[in-house]
Length: 196
Image (cartoon, one colour):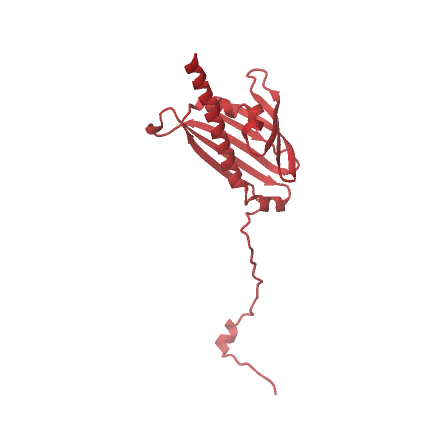
């Protein structure tokens, strides 16, 4: 006995082979490892922009307040302005311990500091940029808006995929640490002036 299917002539012309595509299921929604990841964290602080810029550009002190920063040292300075132009940051958590050499660009006229460690073999791109501006609304007289932009892409795509789960939180933690440092340093200055 044979089974024979018959289609009407018009339906036979429209009949297409059925293509089955395997479904992809993932437990985690990892970012696309082929493009750099970008994150921005922002805070409104009750301090003058120039005072905050001074803290951000003091790279040697990062080891004292930035989470995961085990060491920070300026290795080169501009001969005209004495601003950092190159610095080493040692970063660590768990089994990870890495030192990154960064090219640093300080722009006091724009109240920004940028560090580019893309020459490190672990990364195709690693750039962090701090921007400080006077607060935009009139209710924050004397305050500032501080932004940290982080852009990175690991050389190893697996590292890029896994890092997407925690890097947004790290940027926020860094800004919070900066906020706490500003409070400590700037309030100490105010207290010392009152004591004079």
